[in-house]
Image 1 (cartoon, rainbow, N blue to C red):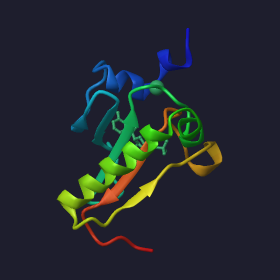
Image 2 (image 1 turned 180 degrees about the vertical axis):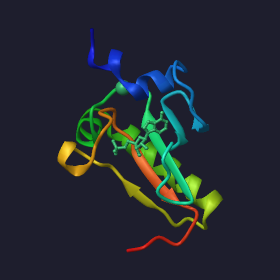
Image 3 (image 1 turned 90 degrees about the horizontal axis):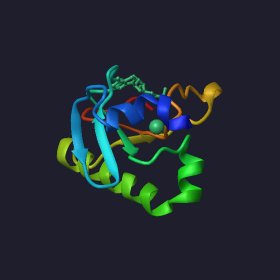
Length: 112
Ligand code: AMP
Ligand code: ZN
């Protein structure tokens, strides 16, 4: 059994657990966070399983750049291109799902 077999976001990507899709292409999936921290709170994930953003950056930097591009596009459509992009990395930084995900927070003016 691989790490990905028991991964919540792998199951969401596979359609085994429902989600509200925002965007999808061959490599990448985006969906609304179930517990939004901003008016628009989207999670963007690579379809391949990497535990965190450092693993993704090392293995596939083009995919990381692609995720940033999608975040920009979502914010362009929803809030004149302004957004916060967060990758919680490690338990003590608040990471709870160990499949890398970009939090895109936008749609309203954010506190500093
Ligand atoms: P993190 O704490 O950075 O690992 O972020 C995990 C995020 O996943 C949290 O913001 C949760 O609200 C979100 N989340 C957990 N389960 C689901 C789900 N089934 N659908 C959408 N978002 C989820
Ligand atoms: Zn996964």
